View 1 (cartoon, protein in one colour):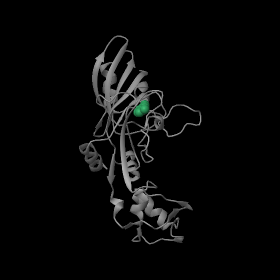
View 2 (view 1 turned 60 degrees about the vertical axis):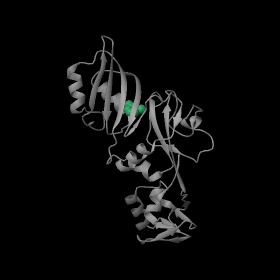
View 3 (view 1 turned 180 degrees about the vertical axis):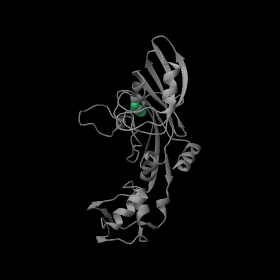
View 4 (view 1 turned 120 degrees about the vertical axis):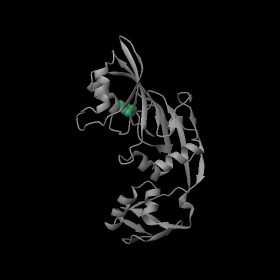
Length: 246
Ligand code: URA
């Protein structure tokens, strides 16, 4: 989906330009400017109020910064067995293989494990992507997990109050039990953090391995009945909700 963006204005502040290009959050961009890492048309700029126009050349640490004039957003149902990267040195299938041809270069917002399927947002709106993945914004993500074994009420309570993982304590999650059988359980879990393999590790912490994991929702974007491997543009309503979140 294409939209004209805030960067279409003839001149914008330098820190906003950098954030919009996905270089860093606005605050981190300000630090880059203060530290003298940013040049406009070859000249180091340290003044925060500086405006840049679209013809200006901007470099950070010597590398040119490309600002997209149009923002593109796409929702993908990432299948299991696909890398959430644009290239894989080992030659495995990546999400780039599933993006329709002819779109501007877009990248995933956050990451799903190789074995996880479900809803994945891709965009070239670097500022929105930075914010949606920043812990401060804590976007809710809901996953449906197929677990080995019967999930017991005491284990559900532990997950609801937060479990200790190796390097941090995961905040309490929302849980909705879909089905509990003798050998497997199905449960929907909503978390707002995004540590590596967090959901799998949370269930392992209470004694259950995850046999399959599907992300049903990323903030306001729901997987719905989008088939595995298929894409769709987000609706206007979803986009507005994403922007309001960030
Ligand atoms: N948590 C996980 O464990 N895996 C994912 O892919 C996403 C969240």
